[in-house]
Length: 174
Image (cartoon, rainbow, N blue to C red; front, side, top):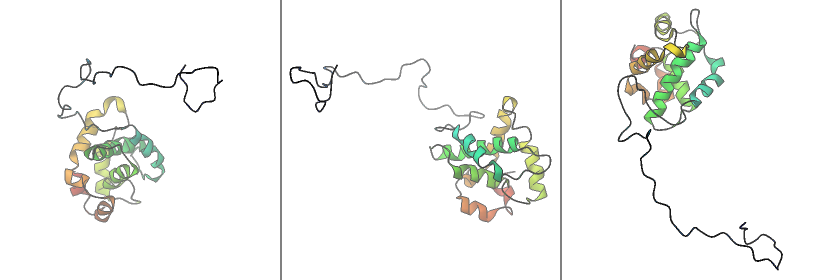
């Protein structure tokens, strides 16, 4: 077995030191059956790809005590819908979701407000109702994400907070 040169050895032994292999491996090429040839597919209901997207659920669960649900609303529905929005924002920048993406998504739909406007709550119930059931809500969550204008996603959390709740319709596209 090879040993580093600094390892103590018996002076009567002649251990091998690490050496590079004699051959250089060929470069990697695309060729596995599941590899995507060309660009990532795009289209309705395909979503927006990004790294480590499952982490958004962890972040959302950590801030769930700050989410203010009204009567007739579900915490699971709120989390599922806002995570989808947070993932869209993170993927726009080609990165994994962070706390600011989740806070952004919670803010545009007024989930962090103590007393949101009644018309906002009514629209939330309409759009977020049932999203907590992952088996049959994928298309609804995609539609929710697609409602939000791209210009809203480019706002900072501070800019967004200054416009809420007065401009919630323009910010959410609802």
